Amino acid sequence: MLNSMQKDVLTEMINVYVGRAAGLLSEMVNQRIILSVPKIELITVSSADESSKHFPPIFTPGHIISSSMRFGQSFEGKAFLIFPAEQAKLLVNACLGEDLLVQVDKETLDFIDTDFDVLKEISNVILNAVIGEFGNFLDTKLEYSLPDIELIYVSESEQKILLKENTYILILHTAFWLAETQVKGVIMIALSMNSVTWLIEKIDTLLED
Amino acid sequence: MKILIVDDSRFHQNFVVKILNKYLPEGELLLANNGMEGFEMFEKERPAFVLTDLLMPERNGQDLLRLIKACDSNASVIVVSADIQKSTREEVKQLGALAFFNKPLTNETASELIALIKETSHA
Image (cartoon, rainbow over all chains, first blue to last red; front, side):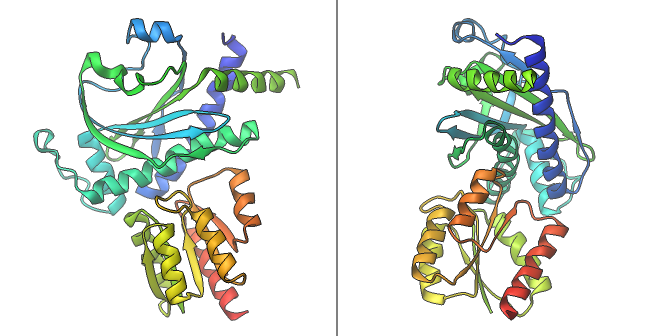
């Protein structure tokens, strides 16, 4: 469905958008952010049902903090920002200017309202920065849902559960690391079929120019 | 000078409070957690400035802006939002916002915000 040029353009777009988002996060935590090269995976609904192998491995199995925002109306999908739970604690501490060297006990993960509030605000800034650029690119206005945030346990076989409830087909994912705290996060954006088609058509007009 | 901060994130509220306390110590800061609370507080306190987020429960920032402007067309409402869409910026401008700043506020944009409040309050 995506030819190499389209994939190249889309990868570069994500790279730029996430780069800007990382710049904002860098301001919030006062640390340098290192980005990975984005990966784009186009999957059919049937292949998503058949196997979880197409879904990006989020992390090793364990607790994760998943923050997500739905967006629509005409360009629609769902964006996720995911951190391993113990690293999310370090990120909160970095934002609050607290001790970065504190060891977080994986067994006694205890998130309080303040932690979720900070993580929700981080995801609000990061996901808006990425999704909003798609709105600008397509010249359409996106409406956002309030961010949902949850602490969940994900086993290896359950990693696709995050996207299961919808029949999304284009998965864009990228990872970033905070240099000082080694916190790793993943951004995933799942788009509906119609939205993917719209995006590809717009990319094609860009390539024709 | 009363300044009302409307944001569902306590983290961001605290961040703005720190900046305003540092650079506008004469400001009397009021806090609200959503657009509904924000409008109730606006009606009661009639602050000189309202700093509001957009994406909030109960009533969003656009609704709050409409309500405030219907109540007082001269009210000074400044939007501070993570939404980076040009269309959103144009929307709040049309609704009568005094200015739009993107979250997170940086040293540079925080300075611009403070300067804007000082200039407008002296105008």
